[in-house]
Amino acid sequence: MNERSVTVLGVGAAVPDRVVTNDDLAAFLDTSDDWIARRTGIRQRRVAGLEMATSDLAVRAAWEALQGAGAGAGNLDLILVATSTPDHWMPSTAALVQHALGATRAGALDVNAACAGFTYAVATGAQFVLAGTYRSVLVIGADLMSRVVDWSDRSTAVLFGDGAGAVLLGASRRPALFHSILGADGSGAHLLEIPAGGSRLPPSSETVRDRLHSIRMQGREVFQFGVNILVRSLRQATEEAGLQIEDLALIIPHQANIRIIQSAAERLGVPLDRFWANLDRFGNTSAASIPLALAEAVSSGRVHQGDVLAFVGFGAGLTWGVNLVTWGGE
Image (cartoon, rainbow, N blue to C red; front, side, top):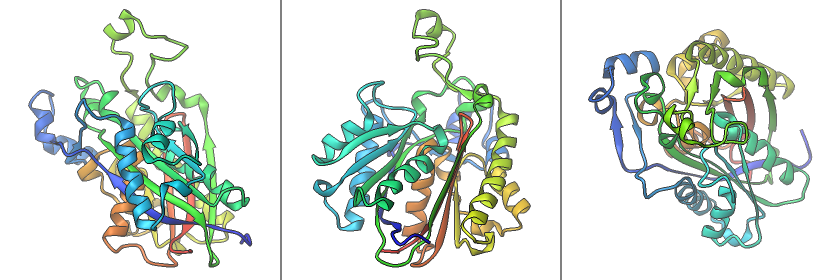
């Protein structure tokens, strides 16, 4: 264990007010509440109004995390926003959040690793704390997936929702474990993508007509990837940290599909209640899903001082990441 370690000092979350149920989707899609729930575990999701942008939810989650830590925005050294639905291609969403918070001392940048983005951002931010470069790093996962969903495609429209979650990272004053692994396999990039809008396929009347600015997913392959990488990456991370899977008090996975979580739990030999899941109420919120679930687990009293938690993200890229964190190490 390093002489210096890092811990979570505060956590926050924010979601839009509007609830969209499976029955609401069934009113215009060839689907049903039973069909969606049995295949995904999702019952409802939150959807932002057109007046809201990703940075708006990110700021709300950030304030809650800062308040929970008893910290002020003026003391922040760095702000990282994990998102694949930024307010603009430039400037970064993190810069907009920095201004809205009044965090005038902080650097700011976005991290795009899709649904694994939060784990990538936590791993990145933690390095500055571990090195002694920065004392206070705010990490936010925020996505408005409703903006990039093709609402006529039932294979993807039923999966996603909007949300944001945030953690404040700082140095631990007590012995605390922190360990991360990150991975990627770009050969699977085509399995989950938004084809148009970047330099490869710039916006045009044709790309809009063909709905190429919306999510395209090969569901079966992505499902198999999710199960395999959740199991493999957890085993790798715990082994590198000198732990057993049983040492993890709570596993907070990316909230993609309840059957992915169930299958991984079975293969790992871990009781399902060791995994925190809230996708039944929020759907897949991409980079927001892990911190959103973490905030709920903390507020529900499921997390205690000294607990070793695992954050496990996986998604487009293909990318994946694990963070092992001791809770309450300050």
